[in-house]
Image (cartoon, rainbow, N blue to C red; front, side, top):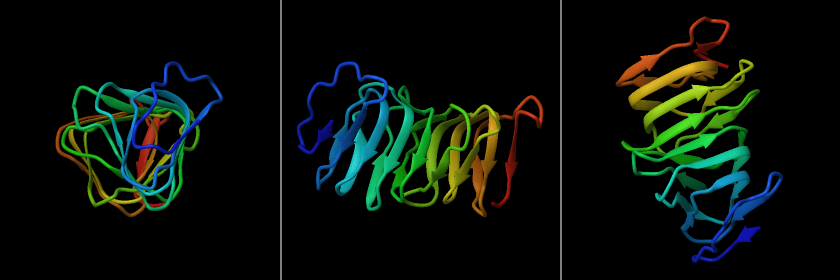
Length: 178
């Protein structure tokens, strides 16, 4: 399904294996939903609708020139359980929540501006899957890191609140560079 209008349709339940592409050449609202594959294209900022939490179960692609703005209501979370690809960027804020789950290699989080500020940042990537930072990130309220490998890639992770580490190094690590 390709959505190229400023006005979005009602989505309903999206099937496993489906792909939704937001491709307007201007700013566009991304409906809060559970997506299998989500692609952000066209141009301009693509902003989550701030009406509920959203999940991408397989693949999030943010094309070059696109800024993906997370929810700005601290009761909603974006959960990414698949992979992240593309040269586009992510915009957070003091009330943005991000959870990275799933397994295997995740991809690189590229902030729109540095640092990417996230209210609550959860990393639970089983199988020691890599999550790579493409810029500085600040976890404002909490960082719950239970599984995975967070690769700082020469960037800074600032923790301004509570931090929960993996129970053992076999569950996950934080490394300074690629």
